[in-house]
Image (spheres, one colour):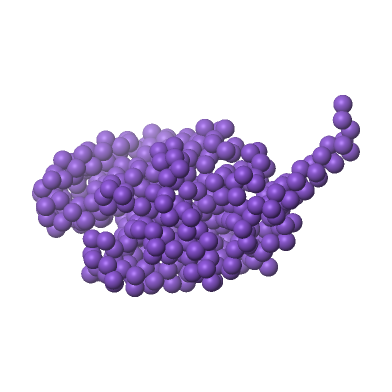
Amino acid sequence: MPSIGALTLDREGVRKEITSALERESEVLPAPERAERFGASFARFGEARIVLLGEATHGTSEFYQARAAITQELVRNHGFRIVAVEADWPDAARIDRYARLSEPKPSSKEVFTRFPTWMWRNVELMAFLDWLRDFNKGLAAESRVSFHGLDVYSLGASIEAVVDYLDRVDPVAAKDARNRYACLTPWQEPTEYGRAVLIGRQKSCEDAATAELVALLSKRLEYIQEDGEAFFDAAQNARIVRAAEQYYRLMYRGARESWNLPDRHMFSTLQALLAHRGPGAKAVVWAHNSHIGDATATAMGWAGEFNIGELCREAYGRDAVLIGFGTDRGTVAAASDWDGPMEIKTVLPAREDSYEYAFRKTGLARADGLARAIPPRPSRRFERTDAGARHRRCLSARE
């Protein structure tokens, strides 16, 4: 039986082997601030149908800059026309109107106010959207790059969007929608609705939410003739109402169900966007590593959880590219508690059994790590925070 010392020596040997492989196989990247050069390093993925770009945190400036640079390369030179992000659909729809030079809809509400607000209300995203708007100026309306949200949490805003749409195109149907959604509208906080159903204080509104979606879709041919884009937006909001109603009930039943439903919704939304834009449509996805990585490579998959990265890989094979981002140290925008104020926190140095640590030991400030350089069994830290983004690893380090 090997001694404890021998086991320790073996672990150290494995770490050195991984670091050596990364030194050999990694491509050194320029700073993401040098957007064109950084983005050009990922031009090899231009033939893909879907490119999913991750992040290890929701509060690291360099991750947003890197995703913007890669997306600009894919949009400008490889025909990608959809940008879909881990955000609420109604908020992103208002941003989409800006990006595609459409007339803004009057509203007294701010966008991206759901915690954490800094996730999308930041200067890096605004700079990207300004670039996207300028790029779209040179394209015909039907060819412009669109910007969409993939999340499932906008229950109230999506109900409002469906009713507002029907008020404009079919007032009788709008009245029916209000009656069906009356089961949900009294709940200002959706989590309270889910808890009330759980303890038997409230009947489920699932049938009503489903009935409204069916009613809307049953008139799609009529509504599409009026305005196809407006109908698509309304139909997607009706799908969100149905999925959100389910989510806020499932969230009390366990982690697996409440994780899988949003990622299934993300994937179905992405498929709907691709179908809506027509044959050959190509999309870039921005979401956390835990969503865009392949869950089958991690403890998530072993626990029965899946994610949009896994579903894309199963559906599209090599036409889906998964690119995760990680770092070893630096600072991050985060909060100490849910709904708490944003703070600038120091990132703890990576564990010695993580790939972030192995990248650090290479001495490369930023590197694009090839999958063949990474052994198939990730460390526990890598499993949960980066969700096995196996196709490639992109490290953006900040001192």
